[in-house]
Image 1: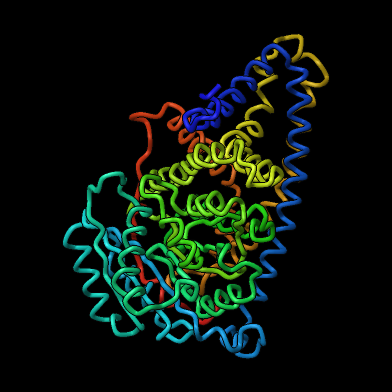
Image 2: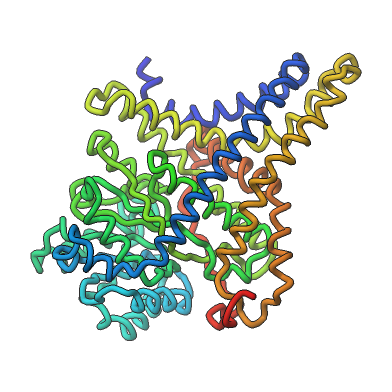
Length: 510
């Protein structure tokens, strides 16, 4: 019985459920083709309703984001009675973990950070370099310090040593080293109260929009429990979007739209990629875990467990922009896309951390345990299986169900019924395609107007992205976790590549 409460059981559980679902797809289509056909019709109807539901949340989130982006948030901080006399007391700690990204990428990040509509004398900026990245990375850091070191209140370069006991190479261990270093070298000697510091952890290619820190400060000062909250912006993967192949664009915007949809459902929203939170709870929990790959989502669960369920994610409805996954060659991009999606799918490792903490923990309300646990497990199961069910189960009963079933009226109509339902569901894809055009940055000089049509039509590739870069990548991650040992994943750094200068736009999209 103890095994069923152990982390190892919960490492096995997601992959076992996913493979059981796939086995039942084939077994049901072979032995019970009628029931399998009825199930796929009902499942397609469920998927249609879910598509409509998510599309409504996407539209709502997009409308809120557009409204938030029209506000001068520094002025709002001064005018709002809740923030007027408090916002200038805040410090913004910005941690930028860096591996071997090109100097041009890092420099663009700092250019945008220096151009923010917020007093730069309230910023403590840490460029967190990995020792294993070598002298080239350190030289990049020195060049950045020479150009931007005096721009902010404090600037610090940290070098995370390689091979420390109990760590794996990755963002989590680097961020923990950087946070501890800045605490010991700057924050504690200056006597800055942790509660007055908002820590933002950004990928080193993250470019802030001008009002981000104003939005963040306002949300922090008006939140119900600012010291028990993660503050999550909307990630846009558009820095180099005009260099990305069609599949890379669709995957990039799909990730954005999923996060934007979740912003309208804050009870399901968790930290992802670049995000912000108070420095005080970070110190209390001992910073990021150093032996996990999915540090961005794990930090949410660390806080949720430590504070006994009293943790939430506050949606900011304001974007940050990062690089789309682009390599020098098309096939290199495809390989990197798969590896990136597989790494994100490795977030399933959080189940083995969260579920044992839930079981028998009376300090966390049972309802919170149930809903959070179900959302976490169901989300990863759906990621690995739903696309396979939709695009495979529609024809499996016809192939495996035998001659008697193939001669039935149900078998004759099954492809037509599923095709009709899926065509209706494509309306949601049309919404995504339209918004992806709206969210494109100003076009560079080499981009022609007719290419917007090509970008819109590229969304017909969504089945490939859902199956290959969705289900297959998630299923591999869950299978590796289930097998454990040598099959476990280490942190994989997404390479950053730029071909052209995207910072020379024409005056508008038209």
